[in-house]
Length: 407
Image 1 (cartoon, rainbow, N blue to C red):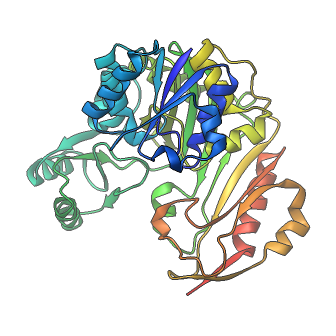
Image 2: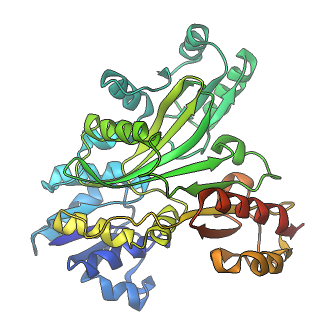
């Protein structure tokens, strides 16, 4: 099995996909933006060949390089695991006649209005939404659906540039902001009240082979806007024993089928509230923010290796044990600037040391990152425990106890 892996060097967890493919017996050929001399010896050891390209999202340049590789060896798969790379990778597959996620599927997993229209046609419950290329279209949708509304770039990832608007004045200001950023068309959605989480799968030939459920506390939009909150997400180990997750798992399978997802990781967002379970959006790639590391730590599994088994061999070797719930709590600096120090970690290690997976505490005098930069942008602690509720309480305690001093 010869696999071209897009951008094996950056971000840092990309090397895990190269490692896993090599361990699964695949011949791994990397294409990335980093010069070959910038790759470390360990990563080079997992790659049999490497090509540099000016941009992995430049379809013409990528196609040229992949065709040159095809001139030397047969290419069975081309894999991209970063959201921003998925569409370009799909176009290169199509141009080079390589199996994998199609351009249609990549488009539906990137363009939110098209995604939701397709899923509504398939009977998947989603929020009302539309694509708006003008202020008039946005206001017409607001008049039809009512406020509040959620605005997003059509192909954005996560909470980046996502806004909630509660009236016409806020809508106008948001549209002006998008205009200044050069965003010509946006997704406008009905605001769905309720608890937010995500459902992640590894699918093989359109069938879900592995799945995991995680919960956000609080919901992402609030978490990414509020400094004093130490937000968490927690992967539950009750997936197989709690009947209520059955509806979520069924919805996920219908999404995979409706969007034509074959052998791929997925990352789906969902809400559950007064209107029941609602699908939010999907990425046809693994989740970010170290979620696979948490799934691996909680389930006695190397999920990167199982992904590689799916790509290289068409099956997974092990099932998740569901032995631990796992989670992360993000620790925000008390101000923007530079880190001055930390307090409270000694207490956490004394009380919960056996349950701490790892922690990240940027060194003193390092620059802080904005609150909106995400769960792993500054300090964080990751933990596990056999009982989900106990783990949530421990993560709450970390958030209250550990302080990142900065100015």
